[in-house]
Image 1 (cartoon, each protein chain N blue to C red):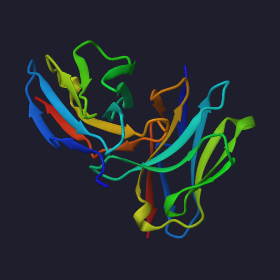
Image 2: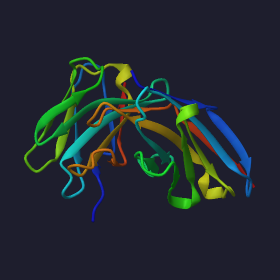
Image 3: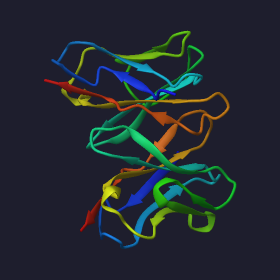
Length: 113
Length: 113
């Protein structure tokens, strides 16, 4: 069974631009969570989606948004990029009823110049 | 709010020596607890998890962790370090439902030949 996939793996943007990252969960997984990882702040929870609905949200500004499609694939969008948004963005998926066990993708490394 | 503390951002051990990575959580209600490993430029891989069953949890690659409620600890151990264990390790806690996982700041393990 294929693991969690994230595209693109690497991305370079400039300040003020927007970016969309994609995550395809493991087949059968319906919950998708997003995390931001930076050297200074560590791993921080962004949001979680289940059946196309956002169930939980971390403490990030409204520039960070996401959505989930009917096939459980998820996208996150960051608008008006700032230098501080440079990070590794990780996506994780889990089975219905087993949300405590998350499987992580390899991440998308975003560099904002 | 839940918090997870990992003592020691860097730990060095000799190959073949005991590995001990420390993790303490703060919660009046024992949460689910996890250890993840992250290799460079990769996502997180679940090593083991505690979900209120046995207090001694065995994971992959010879790692194990013991949940001690009285000490609010969940330390990770491995009897004999291998060069391939060099990576960054994250302790995490899930409480309050859904996917709002709180991660520790991580411990980088160096294995010296």
